[in-house]
Each structure stands twice: as C-alpha cells, then as structure tokens.
Image: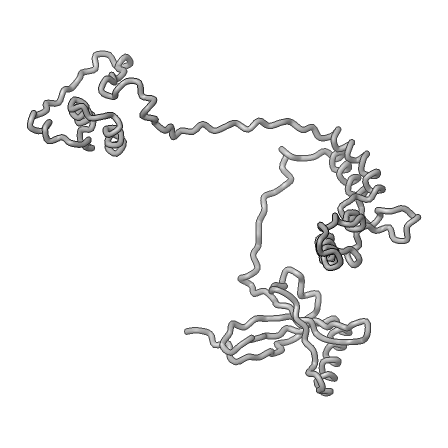
Length: 294
C-alpha cells in the first residue's frame, strides 16, 4: 500500500522555539522566501503579523509542503526575516527526516603513539594566535581585519570581468595579467608573516621529521617469456636431491594413442608435450597448450 501525500499544498503543522532547530537538522539545495500576494493587503498584513510574532517570541514555523499532486511531501522551517528597510518576509528551508541524519563515528585521535607534549601544544596555539586574520594590520589602518567576508571579492570572478572589459575595448590585444588589487588577495599580510616566524621556528625545533622509505612490493605474477627459454621443456629434469631413493614411475603409452595426440590435454600434459615435441612441433605452438593445461 503506497502513501498518498495528497494535492499540492503548504500546511502549517505548528511552531517551536528557534533553539530547537539546529543547523544539523537543515537540508535541501537552497533557501526559499515566502512573500505576500502582490496587491493583496490582507495577505500582506497577515504575513507582517506572523513575521513580527515569530521574531518577538523567537519561534519558527514547521510546515509540510507537497510540490505537485502525489509528490513526496517535505518538511520545512519558516523563519522570520525583517529587512533594514522594514521589509518583512519568511525564509523557508527544508528539514531532514530522522533516517537522513547519520551518526558518524571516527577513531580516537588522542593516541599515545601520536600524543603531544604541553610545550608542543602551546607552540601550535601561539602559531594560531599569531595568524589571527582579525588582527592582521596595526593601528595605522582603519580596519585591522584581513579578507573580511562581506567586502572580499572573488579573485577569479574579478579577473574574468576585467578580461571581458579589456576585450571589449581592445579586440586585437592579448589579455592582461591580473591587477595588483586582485593578486593581493593571494598574499599573506606582512604583519601576520612577521608574527608567525618565531612560532614556526619553535615548531620546527620541537617536531623532528624522519624520512620514511617506501618499500617496493615485489610482483608475484611473473610473466614467462618464451624467447628467454634457453632449453626446451622436454630436457627439464626434476630436482630430487632433497628426496633420496625417490621411485620413478613410467606410464606405458600405446603407439595408436601416440598417433591420436594432436594437442596437450589436461590428463597427461607432460607426456603429450613430449610426444608432440617428438613430432617436431614448434615451441611457440606448444607453450599455449601447456598454459591452458595448468
């Protein structure tokens, strides 16, 4: 029996405190916004009232959405959004189901084999503090932070825009190199570089690096080259030095059966090989038969 979600809808199931919705519970491909119907004053008043109530009480709404008829339903969280210009709306993001949340277990990192001394741990803490991007410049600058997220541009996108503008104004000239403003985004601020020198030297002295030689694995599957065989297989004599007085068994071969042997069989491949070799069969034809008989 299949579950029937029903027709297309967006139904409110209830409300909960915003602290009950953590980022681990969020899923989906992006964020959607819910606005009031354009030109409908009653809908605009209802959305504004709902947004202000959710904002004042620190609540979020839990809604069920069916995108199309008989599509799988999804749960979403409605969160209030109030713009700086007092423009209100609701942001909607999908919630994950219980079976979608996976508890990942990782091995312990505090192993005795890789344990660090307090001095080594403090050395790394000093390096982290020395490379703090919020204190990348001295007091001569208005802003001490380096690469602020709200103001930092994408160097790749900026260079593409520069190339498009340059190509429009100079169709026949080669594209220029990135500007210094773009390349400065790849450079470490001088103050951070200077502050990090001492912690780095201290880490080098506290941690000793040993070169590990990687042993090459021997290939067990040795390919037999027919051209490298010096003596024919018929002259091969088994080594019986380790087994004294080992009896040798000679199997009788009928002459009629000898004439009927045209290829190496899996029952008695050695005798078949000797018979075919006696018929002046070349080794290049006998070798594949010996391989198949094994």
